[in-house]
Image (cartoon, rainbow, N blue to C red; front, side, top):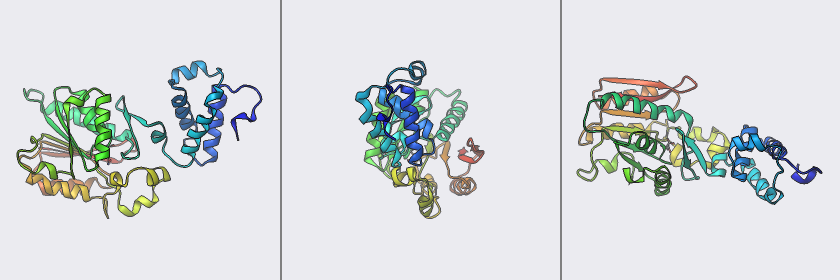
Length: 299
Ligand code: GLN
């Protein structure tokens, strides 16, 4: 279907409907929602304006750009990469194919860390130092820094491209001066004495998909999200195994370790943590589907 196959001038609502149809025919699951996001992006408006102005004419000069966006999404590029943005914890983050797209369940990890640290540091004059390992787009580090202005935050990633994206997002969200970015693999950079301050809270949403399972993921994820952000080795547990092994080598054990895990991995990850150190409590936080999604160890 092409946009000029209708004789009456197109309204915004017509364009949205046609976009939805084009995406649906291309096999896109969330065709309605994605067509709407793309239309808002194309027109540079928010949803409130679209709901108010849906009878307005679709600007003919934007037809080519509109079809271009639909085509990119139709070939399987995730809508967030097409528009270059995703919201997390109420803030906008720039995303490109060098970083994982923020997922809603990761907001629950940020929330749990805020809750637990608020209680643990309740009557402490010295606020916690937080490290986000594998920061990707920077969502966890930036959210924690923005929500708790007194905390000191470090964010690391193996990928220099991801760190550039995260630094841009820190700038965009007004916390760039309060986050230190560190390039390196998992906890390795932090094992060297006197290079970085020791930290009290370790958060991470590391890659945890078993290597062979990546082939079975939907095309949007498999073909477009960075493998480095997804692939957790043969059983998906490699990053946890390595970090748990590194914990006792740190100058000081963090008081809180909060990790996102894959479906069915929580017990194994808890066992790795138990083998690495003594904890007062290890608890799981469920995601919206009722799956144990976050493992939190408290000392
Ligand atoms: N920390 C980022 C996030 O939670 C990146 C995670 C990753 O790339 N595995 O989205």
